[in-house]
Image (cartoon, rainbow, N blue to C red; front, side, top):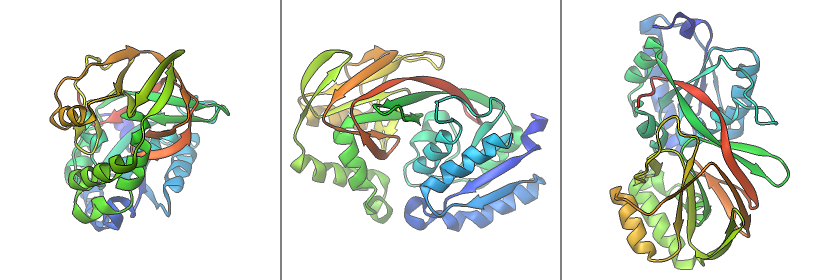
Amino acid sequence: MSSDVYSSVFLILNPGSRGGKSHASFARIHAAFFARGIAYRYAVTKSLEDAEILAREANLAGCSTIVAVGGDGTINRVINGFYGPDGARLSEQTRLGVIYTGASPDFCLSHGLPVRDPEKAVAALARGDALPIAIGRITYADGRPRHFSCCANIGLGAQLARAANSGIRARIGDKAGTFLALLSTLKHWQPIDLTLNGRAHAHIYNLSIGKTRHIASGLKITHALTPDDSRFYVLRIQNRIGRHLLKLYTGASLPLEYAERLDIAGDAEVEYDGDADGRLPVTIAAAPGIEVIGAKR
């Protein structure tokens, strides 16, 4: 066990995760910390923006462990709080912990973390074992950097994220809600034209760029990346979208490309780790990684 895990533990709790059901787990979380005698501080967010601001402040204060309590959106905002406006890490020593209380567990499934089991999550934090995870950086035309740990999507993914985050997943479940949101989105979606590293690609439904196997609400990609690989996988869906989606839901192999840097231009929105944010053009490249407590290979 790493003794510095206890030196300054800060929990960022998002009661709005899982359609507002996340707060029901807070009492169990506090009890689990109390039972193990772990001192900690915490703050409750009013918005996802709060999660990022709090994480940034905790990094600047030299906090040893910042724990995201919520879903993939909360985790992503906390991760972005590990970086400054220039994209550099704010504190090389600060590590990330996760207590999952959200709707779509892509981050936890990708890194072997407990899902909706606060006691197991706190036990993992208490052990203190950590592994670095790869992080991607999206840089917009105005120089603004954003970071993601699972997958970024250009095209259909942004509209799908907006539809899936409308509340349907909270009502009928993550996979079913996302699937219905996907069917609704496909009714009105028109393929787009993109330029990828200077090469034109027509009739694109979606472009996925990522590091992990789990990319969104039950969708999985089989890829050849190792944990220390500096590259991203790139999946272009241009035709036979139904066939591609079936393979994504079953985790079957799809034709992938690999790249260390991607310059993407066109007229389309950007989505990363479940949230739509900004438009093309963007550059995607590797960012300094983050150590995650309890992560497994």
